[in-house]
Structure formats: structure tokens, C-alpha cells
Length: 283
Ligand code: ADP
Ligand code: MG
Image 1 (cartoon, protein in one colour):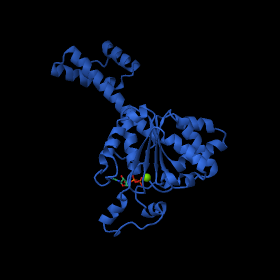
Image 2: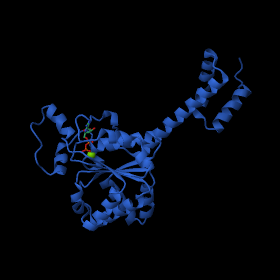
Image 3: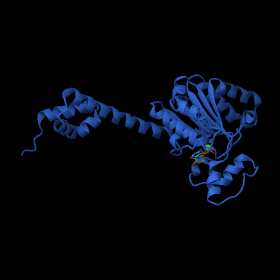
């Protein structure tokens, strides 16, 4: 048989390429064979072809959005043991995972000591809403402030603020682990202000609201930030035990209850394989 390409097939390939129906183009031969084998009707054929293309495109979009989000780890809500942490309102978490809070521009605040699953819930919620077509971006408060301070010193603060203003959900992990310098607190305020009522923020923190003045080094600024964060917000307050410590206790590494130490120092001591050196501490 000659190697000449059938002009019909050539046209089909060109049209599929032009329409960017990549999955259909790549699987056309197999799909045609399947259709002939199974005796699909014309509507059935079109329906399956399009459904597969839509699914492939959606999968690719989600995959790209996950990369853009910069999650520090993979954590799913399905892997969260709600029975271990009864202070977490499971129904609220499930409701939030539906993404309606993003459509409404509402914020989520997760309070709790180290190891109780704040980052897990934040990443799990982020991944869930990406699955529903929203763009999300994850950062730690420390990394965010370093980036904003650098942008400011280079005269490109506005562009950076715009970049962090863009995703429908911005997750800021570990607020309050380190107190902010005065300038950093102002930068943070600018960011919160820019996103206020425009895009959702999900903030995790180990500090009670009453401590925020200390975190931001300024009561007035802390109040202004809190005001904007808490207006239209959902709050999860986790009061339970550290999951990491439970794991260690189970393996016999430690015994008894938590020492009543400063929680941030506590978390530093815990160490942990999943810790990323570039994130300078807790996860
Ligand atoms: P935090 O951010 O509050 O310090 P993490 O979310 O980092 O805590 O949790 C520490 C580790 O324990 C992570 O590996 C996380 O997946 C796991 N973990 C915490 N709470 C739970 C839970 N209730 N169910 C399952 N895994 C959990
Ligand atoms: Mg964490």
C-alpha cells in the first residue's frame, strides 16, 4: 500500500488542529474504530467525541491551574480525618469546597495551633475550588511579604499587588508565625485592601484575633486589616491536638501531652519530613 495520506483524513486533521481539538485529533483513529465496532449512531458518535474532548480540556485546565497555584504539598479534603478534629465544622468545610464563597467574594479564616491541619484544609480547599474552575494561588505570609517588599524596593509594587490581586482565591498560610515589620504590615494592608470585596482570601493563623495587634505591630492597622478580612467571612477555629504529635506519640517518639511552650517554637521543634527548606519553617 502506498504511504499517501487520504485527503479526507488530511482535511480532518487540519480542521481538528485549527479548532484545537487536540484530544480528538490524537485519538481519532481509535474513536472511529470504536464507533464502527460498536455501531454508534451519528448523534452518539458526536456526543462521545465532544464529551471526551471536553473532559480532556478540563483535565488539562485543572492540571495547569494546580501548577500555577504553587501548593507546597498535595492534600485533599477527603484525606482529612474530621473525627480526630471535632472542632472543625465538617459541613462548613464541605460547603466551602463547593466554591460559592469565591463567587460571593467571601473570605475564610482558619485559626489554630501548629499541627492541627490548617495547611491541610487550606490546600484541600484550594484544590477543590480549582476543580470547580476557579483560579487559586497559595503563599505563606512570610514569602508574600518578602515578595512585596522586594517589589517595592524595585519600584514594581503596583504590578506585584495586581498579580496577587488576580486569582479568585489567594491563600495566605501561617500568618502570625513571625511578627511583621511596620512597613511589611502596611504592604499587607494594601494587599488586603486591594482584594477587599473583589476576591477571596483564605488565611491561616496560629494567633487569636486579640494578638493581631502584636503581629502587625500596630493596633490601628491590625483593626483595619481584621475589619476587611472578617467582613463577609467564614471562620474555622481548630482547638484540638496536633496531628503530627499524635503520629509521633503513636510511634512512641514522645509521651504525654503538649508542653505549654510558645506554639511557634513548638512547631519548629516538631520538624517533619514534609518541611520545605525554602519555606523557612512550618507547613
Ligand atoms: P498546621 O498547618 O495546622 O500546622 P498541617 O496541616 O501542616 O498543620 O498538618 C500537619 C500534618 O498532619 C500534615 O501532614 C497534615 O496532612 C496532617 N493532618 C493534620 N490534621 C489532620 C487530620 N485531621 N486528618 C488527617 N491528616 C491531618
Ligand atoms: Mg501549616
